[in-house]
Length: 417
Ligand code: NAI
Image (cartoon, rainbow, N blue to C red; front, side, top):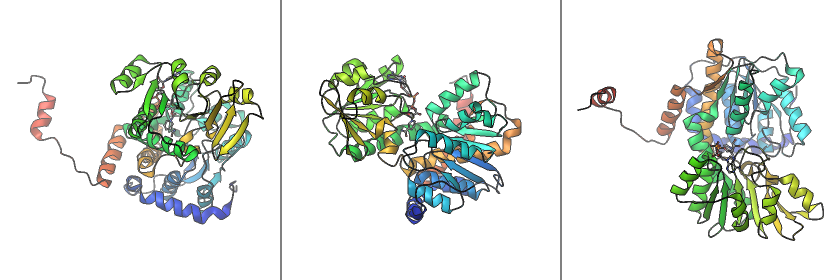
């Protein structure tokens, strides 16, 4: 099958971008070169990931280990077309372009699954869910799969609990070397990258409302403060709310935040966190963005319906103005889709090197161990997590101490002196 991409002539540009990312992902290079032999020889892999320069380094790494890879996007708006062109010219089956319609998006996922993959690497679980829900794939039984993000793992847990999970899965998101860095520092920086590219406005002195104080929300709040914003957090979990307060942020309700915020960023994985009634209370000219996986966190449909075609216009790339019935204007970043990928380039390569080392090593682990695995969700094996951390320290030329024999014995004894 041939690839379906926007423009094959973008390949040389994509290659340059790929090389830039690769040069800043030594951890991933080390993860690839540290593997003995070609454990993915002849294995068919379907990957549903944001098609970015960092992803191209992972995909080529899988190919180096012997895999045949088919790639689709994990979001209709996140594809870097030059990267799709570069990978297609490198023998990867790519079905991805920026601006796919919802139907095309689904069709691209069906195309990668039609390659009858033995391993499925997913971000958000649209591919895993298609395998389980679509009649045409009822006889597809991969030896295993992985999942990149919090929302995808939440969906897979629901699938596991329904008793319908058909193959073992590794929750890559739940590795310490993933969520502590990617979700927190990656999203923290790249969400502001997206906000700045879309708006070009000053952050200092603005009231930034961060909805959700999970790993993503913590990173956004931290970086918002660093840029001089007055950061407010909304939460539904009392523990996270308390943590936000003791981390030095104001904690309030969405109802109250709606009236005071200048910039709103959702990071909850939940639906209608910013509902139409909140949007109607906002001040004129506010900026609203979503950093969560799906475009469900802000009631974009409600906003569109109220503004109508006449009250809606694109004012800058990735920034739309909506005029509400009350005359106030709301500026929505990247159509309410994952702002750091739509309005910027996603996480920086250094951080994706950790996440994708976990993906790559988990795929190898599945290929080697699938016979002994059950149809359930596993964490990333601790030895992989620790290996990724050690490789990263080495790449950063950071040395750490090892516990002495005496310290190891002390840790093992219960009768402390
Ligand atoms: P998490 O589960 O650690 O945090 C989510 C937080 O949102 C929780 O503390 C929860 O109590 C809170 N929450 C739930 N409903 C809420 C509501 N109605 N109002 C306020 N807070 C609410 O999840 P994590 O890892 O922070 O991920 C959040 C979202 O971001 C997920 O959709 C995840 O897939 C996505 N994600 C996006 C990335 C990106 O590149 N933009 C990178 C990593 C994750």
